Amino acid sequence: MHPSLVDTHTQIIPADTGRFPATLLEAMSFYGDPDVATRTLAAARWADAPECLHCHSRDRHFYISTRRIWKCRSCRKQFSPKAGTIFEDSPIGLDRWLIAIWMVANSEQRVSTYRLHRLLGVTQTTTTFMLRRIRLAIQARSSASERSAAIAAARAR
Image (cartoon, rainbow, N blue to C red; front, side):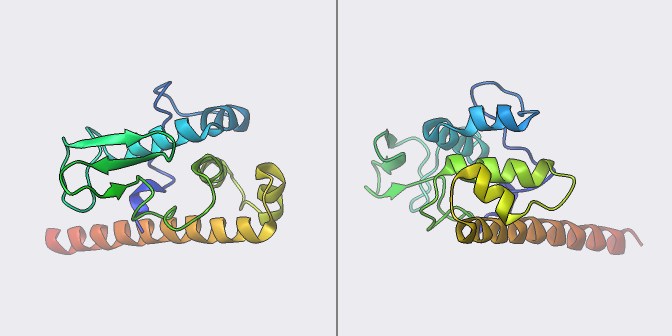
């Protein structure tokens, strides 16, 4: 998993507007389109240009819009911004994932599976799966930052 893509401190900003959605309605309109969600995740993952996950080429690729993936011209393999993240191997669209992440990151209380299932229009089993992955990624990110802070404090002594 790539926990840096899901964090309460790192916000996934919509590529089209350059600002983070303030309300649930804005988040649903920003992330509701699968193409926009894919572009947003790609911009959050690759700052400059998409990088092939197989040969690490940054300049020789093209986008296949019908499948929302890239194909490398160097090694001829396909890659996606979902690969190596909590979204990998999930049949759930990025549009729903990003709305769920927005809910978890902006909720003062814990988000329930029932509330998310009603909002996203998926089963409660699906929202349980999504919330488990989101919470594990946040937990991995926070424990990694705690470890690095402890190491920095130990070195400062």
